[in-house]
Amino acid sequence: MILNGAVTAHVQDSKLPSGPIALQYAAGVVKFRKIQIAEL
Image 1 (cartoon, one colour):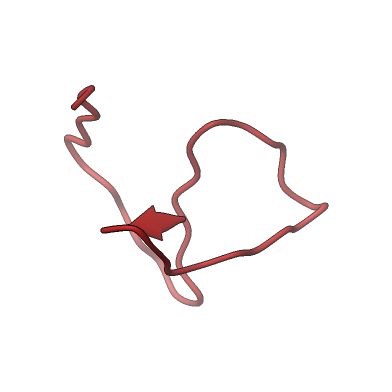
Image 2 (cartoon, rainbow, N blue to C red):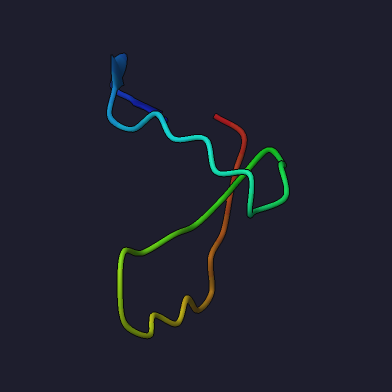
């Protein structure tokens, strides 16, 4: 992931399918609601 021109995360996990966008959390239950992605 790149944020403001700096790499903030670089992870490869073969357990998860690949795709253009991934949301993850290290532990516990996390629920995402009303996520919007817009072209800048």
